[in-house]
Image (spheres, rainbow, N blue to C red):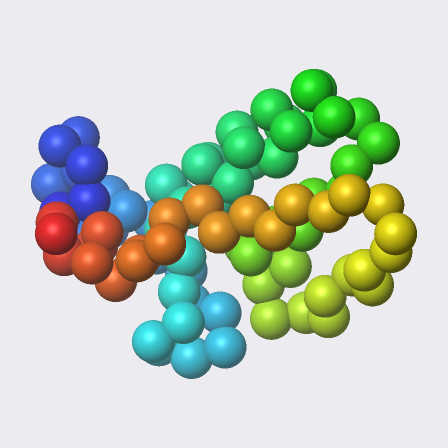
Length: 83
């Protein structure tokens, strides 16, 4: 499922984070990278916190700087099932 180019679960490159219900696909990671690079190019002084980049680690401290929170695919479970 996922996109039309992914025909099986293994094509999605699923990686679990804290447990089996908390996971990221290769598409999540690629989308987050694309979004974060685009924000950094247009707004170099802004901070970006990515769901996949942070993973299960600690969240960077919020400052007075403009900060973007990036969730590359809201609904990864639905995405992996082709919904």
